[in-house]
Image (cartoon, rainbow, N blue to C red; front, side, top):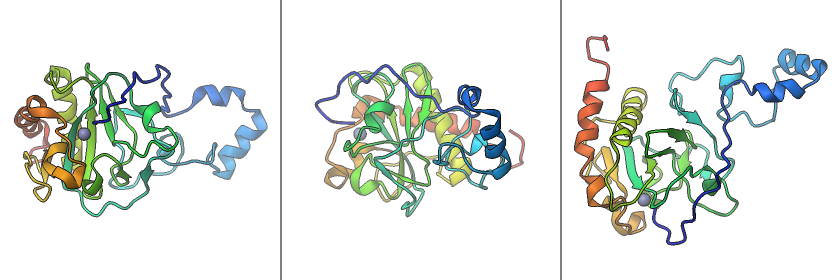
Length: 230
Ligand SMILES: [Zn+2]
């Protein structure tokens, strides 16, 4: 991220975990039965909410299991990915969930993932969809925002969390376990490597850029071995 007017994000955070139990409590028995028997998806928006329904998941889901799934309602494009080159590392220059900010009407910026200082991970956009994080790099790259500032390195928990995101992407979407220094080189890249075509930002700074080798080292440890055993 890069904007100069970053404000502390709203503390309210919407969590769309599977089940939506609180909503079911307010439904009448009739509507609940109708929703279940008719196959209609309650709420109308079934993006990313398949976990609550009976439908089988697609073979290569764009949603990472085991992290907080908080789908944006705007500020991204469905589909429109022309490659899966890997993941671009960003620095938030702030703290706290970016959900409210990225979901704001007219914001026109977003990322696929966000990682807090303690490694908490939120996913806002399926990696099969185009988030708006690095301009000309949006079609071929997924993106992760990391809380904190460019003047400070990623925490140990952030290094581990980004490694886990990357390992999932390597396994599910073929991201190569390597550091990337150029937009045409698949791997774990940084926002700054795209230059003017990616918005001309120094993000995420040299400290965090330099931690990619350690992240990729962990990815190699976490990846399923070719023999099949983890
Ligand atoms: Zn950035």
